[in-house]
Amino acid sequence: MGAGHPHLHVVTCASTLRAGGVDLVVLAPVDFHYSGLATAVATGALSPEAARIDVAALCRQHEVEHRVGRFASIDAAQRTVATEDGGELAYDRVSFNLGSVVAPGGIHLDPDVAAVKPFDRLSAFARRLDALDAAATPQHPVRISIVGGGPSGLELAGHLSARLRTRGLIQLLERDERPGAGLPVGARRRAVRRLVERNVEIRVRSRVEQVEADHLVVNGHRQDHDLAVIATGLSAPPTVVTAGLGDARGIPVRATLQHVDHDEVYAVGDAAYFTPGPLPRLGVYGVRQGPVLVASLLAARSGAPLPRFEPQREALRIVDLGAGRALAARGRWWAEGRGPLLLKRRIDERWLARYR
Image (cartoon, rainbow, N blue to C red):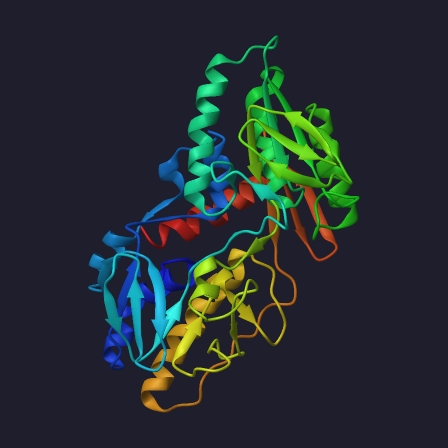
């Protein structure tokens, strides 16, 4: 169910799986949009094609059956899943790679307000930004509110400030004292400094209560804008809850990536809640779960012991700040400049090329 980082790897291993007695059926949209480049695409720094993988073509190449659609519900007793268009699929084993969505954290949101996830909502932001930018001038700048000061919020602020320059008034609203949660202290300070240098207004201790298409309510006061985007924390998709697979944290799995209550159900990527120790929602963990899932499916077929996923203790995170600069951090180490951006582009392009 789904075609994200780990499941794309599984598709490329289809011949090995078939040799081991495992046939694959993938239920997913035609395209996969790589989240690592989502901000650059949404703000016009890269074309949409730069972040797109043709799932249908990849499945054809590896002779995997591809059903175009999305997961709706599961009957674990009957071992069937239902699709949004009313179809049904039977399974011996089923794996969920459904991604994540923005968790508004109690903020009342207009349904049309853009969010960093899922990607289609950020695509709508890109179209609206193009129209506003075409009419913007230094005398009549575009007013943009970014709600959430995590790495995604920093990326958006960086790219928007680089694109609009004197034609934009950009504010980043963070509920806590410091933007850049999860980054080393020095890295957070450097990111904030870069944004302030580009005239981004950073407002901390901002309790956003409501976000509409033309205004938001923060600390009890209305403030107008032309465009808003939500970059608060992430949670599992609503279907995880409605299907009874888990809660907002995700589908609970053991170290074997199996559901805590159903051996035949797996979950990987952002939609999984790794019960041995919760993981940050970073693509690197999904990438590394792919080979474990392949080995587990083969082991389940042969009766061999199931492999266990052992996440790395520290993961590299690179925040693209726009204007040709990025900030890389791992543990307490960090660096900022053009080098980290070149590294990020190399990592992204190498991973994308694997599935094209």
